[in-house]
Image (cartoon, rainbow, N blue to C red; front, side, top):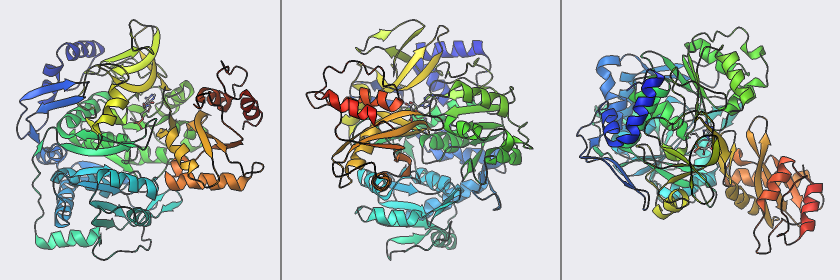
Length: 633
Ligand code: PRX
């Protein structure tokens, strides 16, 4: 599947556009199917209807586990590094991982799980998280992983939206010097969730937890039961290519997060193909993706992509700055990591500690680097290139989204010439177009516009769970016959793509996607808040920070306590990741005569660009703007 030269890339790309079905059928031949497809692709972006490899039967875990047993069964599948460097690391070979997945799949079955059930997973970054994910896939249950930083309310919303009947969690988890009481958060969430019948709890932090009779069971006890039953194997459920594999919630510009739905066959082919190519994975290499499995990057490029390719994937429980800012480099040194895939926010944060944390760390094993989640500024790109890659590692700046399933626009390591700040060129099968506000396609180079994709790729979302119409209106209705990404983009004279950031009301804070409407709703829950408007502003480390303008009439003066109350409300409703960085109390928001908040003006004020606010003639009360400008933080 691997492309080995730039000329070959161009040829393959051409073929993938001219004969997409033949191209993807060829790629799909590299995977294990219980029955091959009758039809490669059936699609329209109107409804939308997207079906890849219809008629095919498979189980993705057979591709990620069983098919490797004869060849690399005793090679490491997962290397796990704990939060605390004093604790022992763990290595699971493909055989061990296979056995543990089968065992836990049987635990799920014993607890009533069946094909098609939705199972919520809220766990720390430990191997059992990957095991739980794969065990769901093994039996055909649909996993919905919720990142450990989300609040009880966010979990409850997600569980209720998908009507999950089982939750898999741990007593608690560790991140840096914090202990996170996962089970207790789940208990708070479940007060609102009637669909959940079972909670399976793994022991990790040994924090006291309340176990509810009939509902809550210990992971370890359930595994023992399976062991005494003597059924170590768990035959893989036969899935249709278009059966749902998972739901992953992500924020948009309006309303609550949507459950992005990925299906089995296309997602497997797409993540496997893009992983093998972009990182040019060679047998035996150690690959370290620093994401959390709670996000799409972890799903596709810690679990499914690497494992389907027989890679050794390194999972890290902690954070880059614990116990100090040299932690990533210690891990690279300790396990002789060859490929490192991380986020610009981590790079910028580590850069700010200078070179001290790099001293004495042997990074010579590194041969390829990746970046994901947000635009990478040139300074961070060069630091990554020089200090980490020592000028000899290609950097894959990978642009993609939760909805895409896998990498879309990215250099292929050692194949595509790179350029700082550029995601470079589309991968085979990806047909990007730039369009203007009216939906007119902008041809040629040296242009910018809104980024759309005009042809399906196997890893794309199929729907948003329980609400297909929302999927249509969000992604397929803005521009006819195109998938709209929500990103702005420029294509330079060489045809290289540079993503410039979201053009909608979605923020990217430390690589986390946050809807401004969601944060506003959370702020507005606070009893003394009348209304609020949230915008992003440039932040040195996080990329974007959250700036909230809050109307709070009984708030006299800028009291710190009121700010903390509001911040806590956001943490409680959404989670700590969405906390505003700045809160400015205002007496009113700039609105048009029809009552629409003029965010453009607030954005400029938040960015500190108050000299030119553009046309303010449609404002109902221009005096409000002067007041906000004067009080800007
Ligand atoms: O704005 C783009 C930005 O992250 C958004 C997708 O966020 P999410 O679904 O959470 O997935 C993140 C990880 C795949 C995009 O709409 N983004 C992602 N990668 C890049 C990027 N922006 C610029 N350059 C990138 N490499």
